Image (tube, helix red, strand yellow):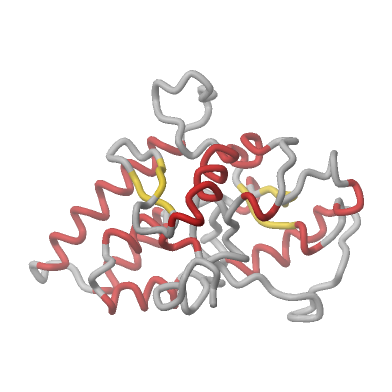
Length: 226
């Protein structure tokens, strides 16, 4: 889950409300990506612009007063949007990419499923686990609740394997920073690349610079962005 800087109301033409809410989609796309490179704010997968959803952070069914509110929008792929669906929750019970610094919250299993990152402070563990459950990021191939069309784990696992291979090539001088960034922007899953290359400062800086809307200080501040 890439930590991002979401534009504030009044910034870059952002207005308080969008009715219908789908009208916010071009603004969200411009905030968090560029033509051809859009990513789900939750799972980080690369998504074609036409397939992106204006996602209500708190479900509009239980919070109708937030249906058209900019403050309640993010961008999501269909899988993440469907996983959350109408589940209501408290903002204090989860971590969100535009509020918290999520870079140290999650870790990855070899099969591509997401788990709690052990370096996260104990005080945040319940929020991270609740986020994983809410979005179904823990669902692998044989998880009984996984829908057949939910292939996030599979895609993420493949990117994890690619990133590890690229790291080896980078260390041996066979790949440069731009080679890594080209592969990362094409494949998506920013956090996978950030964690695999966590000891390569130049690559981490490039990941921030080349994924539009990334929270600039994500590698230097704690989860609460303080």
